[in-house]
View 1 (cartoon, one colour):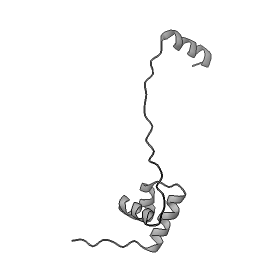
View 2 (tube, helix red, strand yellow):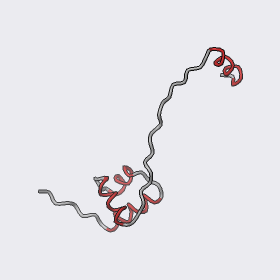
View 3 (cartoon, helix red, strand yellow):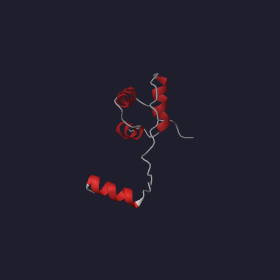
View 4 (cartoon, helix red, strand yellow):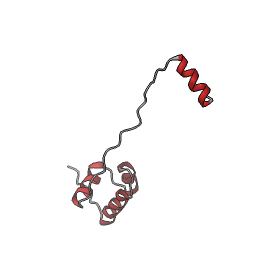
Length: 79
């Protein structure tokens, strides 16, 4: 069975400061050389840091408009 790699105090401190300035978890993993998201969350939880809300990506929508409205918009907004 593989032994879990120890996280240094420096890595832990860096995780906390990077998270507090708004860096994404994936970026924190790269910057601190920590391989697991769960480890990052464990560090945050054990230090009483509240988690940021998850942000959903941009969603695409399709809007259908009548031809006369499209013509009006084209004229008005010089499209």
